[in-house]
Image (cartoon, rainbow, N blue to C red; front, top):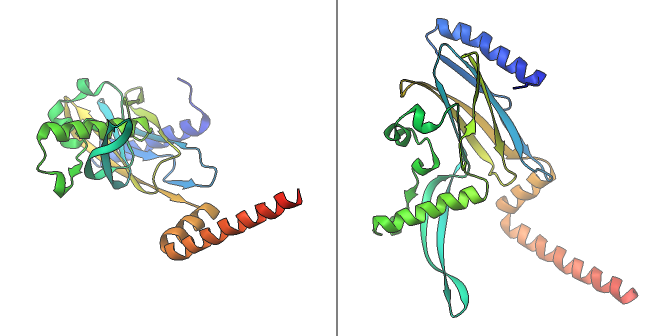
Length: 252
């Protein structure tokens, strides 16, 4: 596998760091190529490199989660020829973004019980059902939960399959995580696990901040902080645009 100069420098830095970390009893070090993602008006998504080094052999698993949100999953039915929302379940604490990466298939690294405990895999995400929906049958809730994950995957916000982690000489590792253009702003967390013999012997967590910048950020903040004024301004702009269009077409 070819590495660009920046990647090689990052991996070398990780290798040097792990030497001192080993002296302190740490078997794993990891970091991100960027801890800040700026969303501008023309933002189309971005890739972030996660890299690190190991003190000895083992399997590496990375879990990246975005800020939590409340999501309503709706079941549509066709009534009198029209599709309508017939039923819905609300899930709370759902990460806006969720990605997993590993150097081997997860089923070969550790057991399902451990993956569930550590929430490794979209099927193990701990989303809480809203209070009004807790009395529903378990099978009903499971169906809506599957739809939740399916919708997130369709929008590119949940991993369909784990990304590949490359390990070089049993020491250095790297993986590239893609963040789509519809990612939410807020705090993200990358947790890197080191597994040996099916057990997680160490975990390293590193943060990442995603925020809007520029004119788009100013408009977004104004719309949320001054919603009444923003609504009035939007009406004024719409009326002016309609008046201007009428004047132009009359002259034509």
